[in-house]
Image (cartoon, rainbow, N blue to C red; front, side):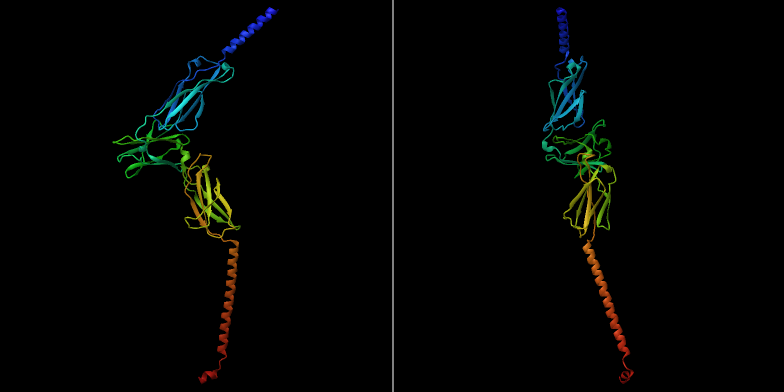
Length: 381
């Protein structure tokens, strides 16, 4: 009996040992990590291959943890994926760094997570031209969600014959496209207008402004942004002011016409009591999504102006530009002024009546005096 018991325990222990030894306790890192530039103005692909040991592994979930950043970035961007390829936008004027590791979890690891070492790689385009030959003060505005205007200043070391050109790309285009509507200053390209970009909203928009010159190389500039964060809407329309009997001022306006979605706008309302004064102080009284605003005029006695402007709100973008102001001026008297006006009117009416009575009395007196002159006196004369 004891021998049978010992044999059974031995068999069970051996089975557990084989089972535990089958659990994966380590995993190899991914292979052949590389960063590929397909010529899409900063949209790079990070690719890798799985370690050979995973090709025959089953009953386990295989994932990869990817980290990447550009020179000067304080933090890594982190992505968890089951794929072997990932794309994102980068500033090609900076060095790009990426690293990836294998994550293993499931029955083959006894439901615990096993991590590999990191695999590293970097990417950087060869530098071209002097740094001072790059364009300066690059600035883009997406006007009223309808057209994009980008402007720049020429590089400090740009030779007289230098020519700058803008190229752009976003997901959905087969290749980078050159601007067809340049803004020129003294015959040189210093900006670009782009239309029909609805398909490019809420995705990365990549831009390169490159230069060419017969005498020297010019350094290109790369930018990646999102159009909805560059919107400057048109000013609010149909601003009107109405005054109630209770000295409340009701201000109402309409969203601007065009491509700006009305639900994407916040409005700022400001007031001033200095009509026509360009340097007059304005007081912000409201920031809201509604297109109406009511306030009391009880403590105001001078001419008042109200102005309203709009900006893309947090529900549609992370940031944006304020529109120009829409302005309207009006005048409302206070109660004491109204009472004074009434008093003046009453006094003037009373004086008018007195003057009329005086003139009437004088006229009557002259008339009676003429009737009392005797005919004899007239004959003697």
